[in-house]
Length: 150
Ligand SMILES: CC[C@@H](C(=O)O)C(=O)SCCNC(=O)CCNC(=O)[C@H](O)C(C)(C)COP(=O)(O)OP(=O)(O)OC[C@H]1O[C@@H](n2cnc3c(N)ncnc32)[C@H](O)[C@@H]1OP(=O)(O)O
Ligand SMILES: [Co+2]
Image (cartoon, rainbow, N blue to C red; front, side, top):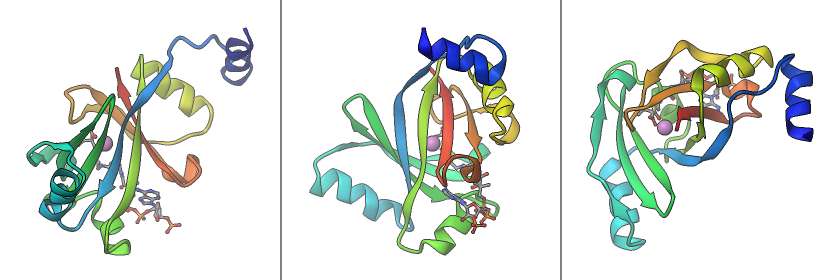
């Protein structure tokens, strides 16, 4: 199979995890209420209440879009990882994409073997109660990528 063969060439071993669907696209916003209202009242989407994610330094709001989601992010606390981003993008902007993987530990091993840096050593529990890890945007064509175990 071509896919397994290329995985073998790059990592020296067979791939034991698979990439799944796009879980969410995250947008950092300066005004959470205003952004929620846009998706709820103007576009008619199903929009959650804001949830403080203390461990991650953000508030999240999820907008359900069929099988996928938009995640609205707003800074929480003094050292929010999205503070600099919002400082540089004052109107807000697309912050990251989240892709599902069947086995996050194995996925981490593969990305590291391919010189893609992870932000943090170990996965942490994300907004959906599942392990997540972020990949450095400079190693992913300028896009911050979150991997979430499915
Ligand atoms: C709720 C939990 C979870 C979920 O389950 O869904 C979440 O989504 S949490 C979301 C928030 N958490 C995170 O984003 C964690 C990972 N992020 C980080 O560790 C940092 O944000 C970062 C990526 C290391 C950037 O940190 P920052 O303080 O902004 O550093 P710099 O300003 O020095 O940026 C370095 C460099 O990277 C560029 N950059 C920054 N953010 C992004 C981005 N979102 N997309 C693309 N590029 C980004 C930044 O512009 C700098 O580039 P240069 O200017 O060229 O140096
Ligand atoms: Co996310």
